[in-house]
Amino acid sequence: MDLTKHAHACVSLDKNGCRLVIDPGAFTPDAAELVATTDTVLITHEHFDHVDETVIGAALAARPELTVVGPDAAVGRWREEYPGQIVTVADGDRFAAAGFDITVHGSLHAEIHRDIPRCANVGYLVDGSLYHPGDSYRLPPGPVDTLLLPTSGPWTSVRNAADYLRDVGPRQAIQIHEVMLSEIGQRSVARFLSPEMLTEVPLTVLPVGESVTL
Image 1 (tube, rainbow, N blue to C red):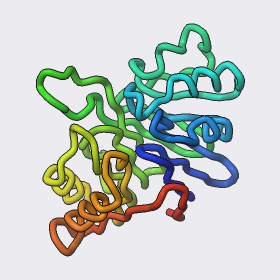
Image 2 (cartoon, helix red, strand yellow; image 1 turned 90 degrees about the vertical axis):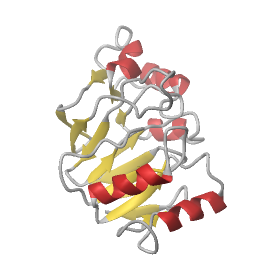
Image 3 (cartoon, rainbow, N blue to C red; image 1 turned 180 degrees about the vertical axis):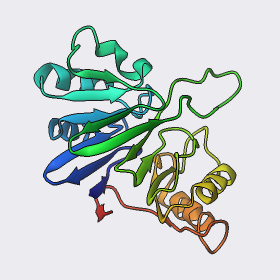
């Protein structure tokens, strides 16, 4: 598959002429364009930086072939109006979409603060090789080739990210969830999360708009 990095937590996956889009949120300027070019959108959780409610609502109305998948808290708002286009998932589910085999893992967003309630969050393992954890350090069910690693946000830390990367042990790690870091900040985090310092797997900072074949 080919992975294209979009702003923040959003990526698109292309294989055999089919496309899958994950987490087109409000921090992703081309979210509407991306949703218009895919038949399946995966959402990890309800936060606005992962799901642009206006973009998804408009696309569901305009494109009856569009399917939106995610936890009920994130996508259930559209179920009554577009019942055939909404698929709710939870930990342990498995389904096929756009030519990809997908399994669902996890249940809760990482803790931001004890006074902030935790919402539902799921991670997606695609074709048994690529893992998008959403906003969580939940481990995938087994070894993965490519880990999409969040690097910024009120719930993240270099310490926990390093431990998570060590525990998952992927062949490669690609940065996501980076919008709160400057370019200097991204390079700094990548240095910490590298064989030079804390991990055996270097963190790839893939510029927005660039693609890599997995």
